[in-house]
Length: 156
Image 1 (cartoon, helix red, strand yellow):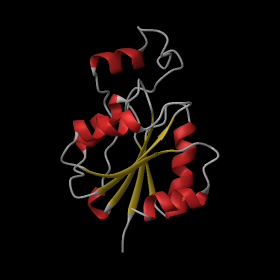
Image 2 (cartoon, one colour):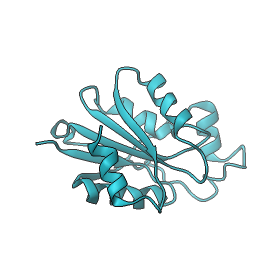
Image 3 (cartoon, helix red, strand yellow):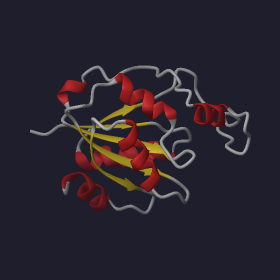
């Protein structure tokens, strides 16, 4: 029996709502990737080159994560979700993948974004983590149907 973990990072709540829908649709467990130091609205101001998120992305600084997945070995599928920052994954996602052994997992990536495509983000993950099994990736938004979510996980 296949067991699915839906792990996600959500700075503003958008990705979290999609992750919850995915977990329900695939009957998976949820794990929130939380930074030890929460982001403020000022931290997330991508127009400010001195904001925390801008500095992390430009200098490849990976924030500490509050907790690890304690039972990762129970899952064979991991759905990994996050907002697109600077056309790629936030550095906290890199930290999450570095700290959790996912080499034997099938990883499905979903992203949220106002307008960016998943293409460069997905390529970034594949380049940064060539030993991981990224099965597929998709951009979701509030109009995505539950059937589209199920198909994304089950058709690959």
